[in-house]
Every structure is written in structure tokens, then in C-alpha cells.
Amino acid sequence: MRKHIVAGNWKMNTTVPEGVELAKAVVAKAAEVPSDVKLIIAPPFTHLAPVAEVVKGTAVGLSAQNCADKTKGAYTGEVSVDMLKSVSCEYTILGHSERRQYYGETDAKLVEKIHLALAAGLSPIFCIGENLDEREAGKHFDVVTEQIKNVLYTLTPEEMANVIVAYEPVWAIGTGKTATAEQAQEIHACCRKVLAEKFGALAEEITILYGGSCKPSNAKELFAQPDIDGGLIGGAALKAEDFIGIATSF
Ligand code: 13P
Image 1: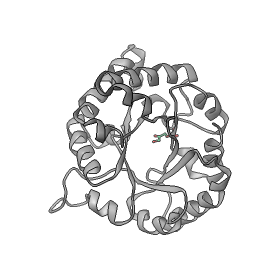
Image 2: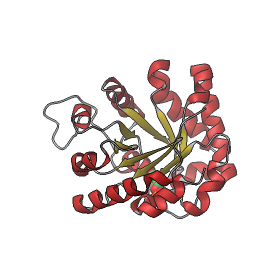
Image 3: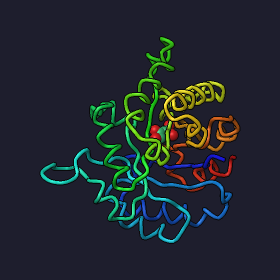
Image 4: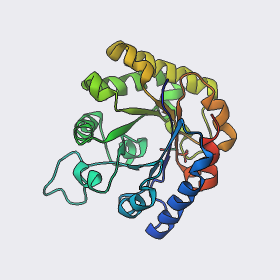
């Protein structure tokens, strides 16, 4: 039985006091979520230490949105995996399309980051997905296959067992345009098949999340698909009610 996960990527939203309030609201509502659904929140770096205090001892997990590709030293503006561990982070998002698109993150960089994260004991939430041009050219299966091969194929099965995959079609992120349940399912199944080619039966155990304009009104249909194990939520994670509404949609 694969783990069901609903993770909230807050992106560059909320001040620290607002973020602490949002985390408290999520914790207050977490009891509404079935115990087989794991809730994770991913606030900005500045919020991690105070939010860690809020989620301490609760079922809500704490994730970063990124980590450095170096362990320590003269890398101005970067945040290391050890720093994340020191504020009780358990997860980190890696390879979000916004990092790839606006900050030039390549698969090669992501290989370095994912190995550092895993070595530090963080579970990466590794994002993949095609943009609109690639989708319209019918290349979406090739794009996600290549992203998986370039990065996840460098892992051992023991390492891969600690990775969560998130399929996020770039054209669906923040656009209000969700992939249909059918479109999402066929690509999730493809991802699992590509993972199985390298990792065998382990692929059946790997949680693959859908992300891109997921909200309470469409989560049920998406989560009913056999290969969709939950969601990576952006905009709707900024309201505790919507976030919990999604997490109760299984
Ligand atoms: P939206 O839910 O705002 O479309 O964002 C999805 C996302 O990018 C989560 O990482």
C-alpha cells in the first residue's frame, strides 16, 4: 500500500507571522484528515524554525522548498541540508519547475542536490513535468522519462525508497487549468513504468503526487486514479480550509 501524501508548497508567500498562523490553522484541522494521509507543509526558509515549533509532536511534516548543491562554505545566499536538518526539516522539494525555469536548475545540479539531501536523511519531493510547448508537441512522456532517468536513475534502490515524486505539468501550475484526471493518470502510469524499468517492484511502493491547480473541487477525481497518490499543492495550500479539503478527498 503506497503512502498517500498531500504537501503544501507555499512558494514565496506569507510573512513569518502569517506563516506561523497558517501552520497553526493546518495543525488545528489535521485531525479531520484520515490517518493514512500524510500532511506536509513547505514554507519559505525563513519560516522553518518557527513553523517547526508549531508542527512539533503533530502528524504534520515539515519540508523545505529547495536546498544547496554544496555542503557548506562560501556560497552566499544558499541553505545547506545540514541547516535544514537542524530546524527539524524532514523533506525538501527539489527540481520544482519554477527553480528549473527561473533559476537555471539543471538535471545535473539536481543530481548533486538529491544525493546531498538523501545523505543528510531528508526525503526529497522530486518534481518533474513538461511545459505547454512540450505538451502540444506530444513530447510529455519523453520529457518526464528523461527527467526521471537523468536524476532518479543515479540513485540506489535504498535511496529511491525515500524519494517522493511529484508530476507537475508546468502549464497547469497557478493557471487554474488542471490536467484532467485521465491526462494525469496516463503520465503517472508512465512515470511508474519508467521507475520499474530501473527499480523493479519498488516502483509500486513509490508515492507519485500530482501538482498543478489542484483544489478541493477536483482533488477527488484526481486522487481516485490508480497511480495518483496525492498532491503537491500551491495556491490552495495557502488556506488551511482548502488544503485540508484536498487532503480529505481520498
Ligand atoms: P498551484 O497549485 O498553485 O497550481 O501550484 C502547484 C505547484 O507548483 C506546487 O508545487
